[in-house]
Image (cartoon, rainbow, N blue to C red):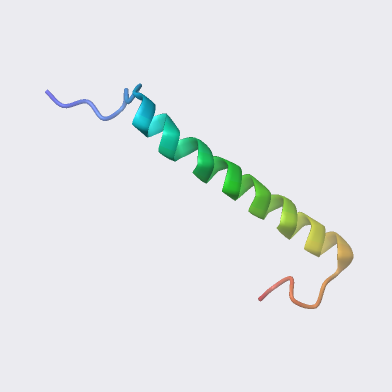
Length: 43
């Protein structure tokens, strides 16, 4: 049996955490652009 649900190893966390951080920063930038009513917010 091969279970892909339980990946509890360091390489998985090492590649997942930076992606989560970058996605969070992108979300903050998008929220900031929407709050400023920037003309490039939909680009």
